[in-house]
Length: 262
Image 1 (cartoon, rainbow, N blue to C red):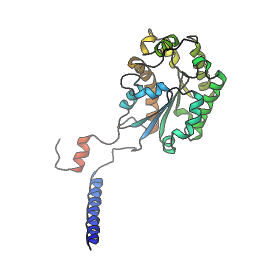
Image 2: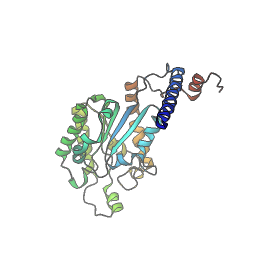
Image 3: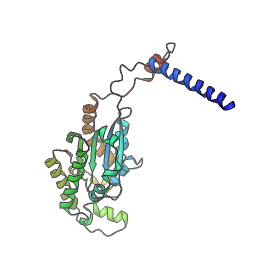
Image 4: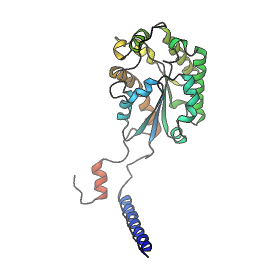
């Protein structure tokens, strides 16, 4: 008998809760809400991407997320030490169908590990980039949503010293991989952000890196400032505008409580 009474009470509570929710929902005017779909900006890369939310370092992903609050979610799929070969191997397993369907923008940044000590031959690097981009497109992502960033300047002598190993490649070696990135982007008609040229032509490119390879806050700001206009345009293309979702607090409170005063 007690369990029947408990069931009745639970049913009453749930019913009342549903009624209250229905009243709140009906009171809320979503007329100015536009598209409520949360789009996604997806970052794919190595340690420069894994560290994109590092508060004390290369926080360019944090800067993107801050600008996109209540508009789009920034998802980082960065893997420290990974090359295009290793990202190619795991790409089918790191994103969901929903990620692809709601993607407003894909940002790919790979190559710094590929170029280390000729770790990945240049032709294989090119083939891997082609495969990665074509795989993303095969999931229904249009080409105009994809941004390919070239690997930035890599001061190998500094990086070797910071990490305690002998330098074993020329400082200009990464430039060849940046050239391949540009070529791949041209052939696949993908927009390219030439991060190599941007950082190379900086008055003091060493000041952008905390260890010769990974960006510090100054370097993160350079990446963000260069990337943001491209991301912004794709957000507008996806949503039709650059507008935060849901009304300001005083508007929604007023619609829910007629006696509420700002």
